[in-house]
Image (cartoon, rainbow, N blue to C red):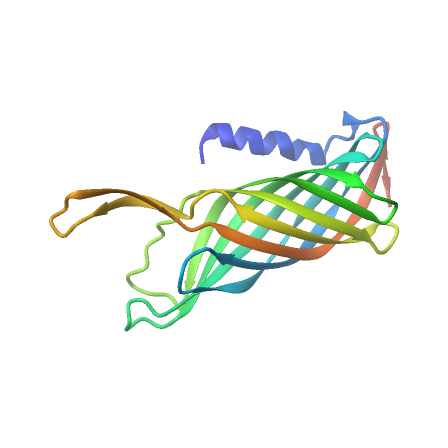
Length: 212
């Protein structure tokens, strides 16, 4: 990951710790849930992962606010036997993801939002493992996302989001049997549905933190 990307990630993460961006009430909490993910390649199927991390919500004006999620996320997919003597299995991708959404409250219970997700790949794990497996995956991952939240308690809500990958899982150059360059290939985008819970732990007003 390039230093400039670390800087951007750190800058957005500071939103979790600094309540003075707004004179209204800012919240800091936690979020966790399930990932239902797949990639848009033939002979692959969806798989179930998870995510967990921090959440902040910073009011902007009226019914608009900025929501940020900094999460550890397992996105995965199942593959068919390839080559024929290798069994089918699951490819697991572990990411540190930053989600930033513009949020609009329809009423006191329901809000909708849309935004972007930028992530860095921490590790991959193939199940079952194989001697020929190589970590060929791109380290950066980017998606656009949209979702809806429903408040079930004073400080707890159900979140449903859809993530549509706009970056490729793997890139490279194709060559023929003689080593001649056949051009670049780009393959694989994630499609993820996230369903989970988020809860507010600390509420801050005018820079004065208060536990929920």
